[in-house]
Amino acid sequence: MSAMNTSDKTSVAVNTATDDRLSPLLFVEGLTVRYGDFHALKDVSLSLAPYGTHAVIGPNGAGKSTLFNAISGFVKPTAGRVVFSGTDVTAWRPDRLARSGLARSFQISAIFPDLSVEDNLRMALGRHADKASLMSSRRAIGLGEEAARLLSETGLDLRRKERAADLSYGQKRLLELVTTLLLDPRLLMLDEPMAGLAREDIPEVTSLIAKAAGRCSVLLVEHNLHVVERLAQEVTVLAGGCLLSRGTYGEVASDPRVREAYIGGSASD
Ligand code: ADP
Ligand code: MG
Image 1 (cartoon, helix red, strand yellow):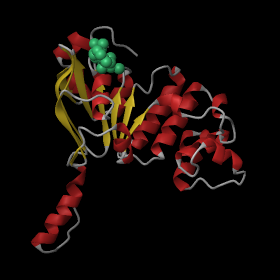
Image 2 (cartoon, rainbow, N blue to C red; image 1 turned 180 degrees about the horizontal axis):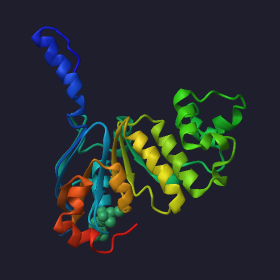
Image 3 (tube, rainbow, N blue to C red; image 1 turned 120 degrees about the vertical axis):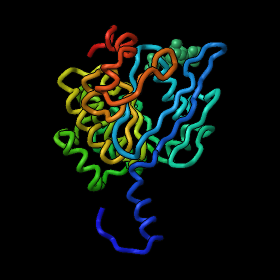
């Protein structure tokens, strides 16, 4: 910390601001989702820092998507609470959560295939209420610095005039992520972003997520453990709806319970 010599009161304020990185952006406590007698999620707690990547792994049916759905308002938890940026948002609907900075990526289905790459970005930036309004405006509108930076970082600037439908699968995934990042989320939730990608597309998508995690908090469900190892500072392992283990990738990967339930089993890249 810089040597700011101020009154006690001010230095408390300075410390609070500095420690913002440490106070959780998302706090999930005792989250439980029951379908009849079946617990899809049971008493799961989780805390996310404002930056960095927290991965959730576990075998199929472990409750990973249910956890995502309960956090993002798509499923009403049976018990527990979700606190986002200090506010209890447990009963909030997905659209309200989205407006408050919680972005859930829905992958390729979210892009407009018949629009160009840059028009997809314009739509994301909200300069047009709908596609018709965008199409009727023939005037080229600048995309702004952030969009231009994301385009060049992903290599999509080379294809900015092309229809999104003509991009490769990996580039579509990048485009969808870029449009989500343009919403300037505080929390980015990604459910299996590498699913269906060709092996050669994985490094680029991984690197975009790593960059995103420098600007917001990323909660990631991912089966590709190389990607998890590369991206995640913290890993939560679920099995049968319950928290099985938590720690760094190295810690959970060497946890005998995790090896038995997941990593030692069928999980692979
Ligand atoms: P994961 O994403 O880890 O593969 P899910 O969260 O999708 O697992 O599912 C966890 C468990 O909850 C699974 O056994 C699944 O069949 C069950 N489940 C999920 N949604 C429902 C639902 N709407 N009704 C009943 N059971 C469900
Ligand atoms: Mg799932």
